[in-house]
Image (cartoon, rainbow, N blue to C red):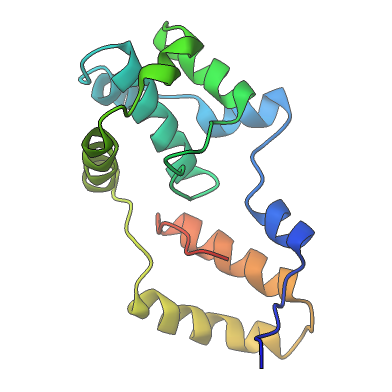
Length: 159
């Protein structure tokens, strides 16, 4: 028997949606001096842009940008403008699969992002049990869990 999903496709999409207003983009994706210093250690505009975009996706919505995924165009432009590189540099990023893996590993180390583990799962079950007694809405539970994981810099699991 197939498992029943507690989230509709639209709910799942809304939980991981990127900000669409300029103010929210700026709030979530403006780099501080420390961020810029770390980003500028990458060689070449493509690697700086790719590293920075990956950092943005890890911070919010809390996921890893897939190998074949293109970044959200307004986010890409905002990041490119901050780094003073062209958005077309993205096309050259990650031509070596190993570059993306190395960047992801470094982002986790330097910025403290952690993968979702069984320990996080157990903690989530404990945290959500009381809330689950108060609602039958999966979106409420998923929203609470995602907020909790983001605050802990845990990379979100697949929904």
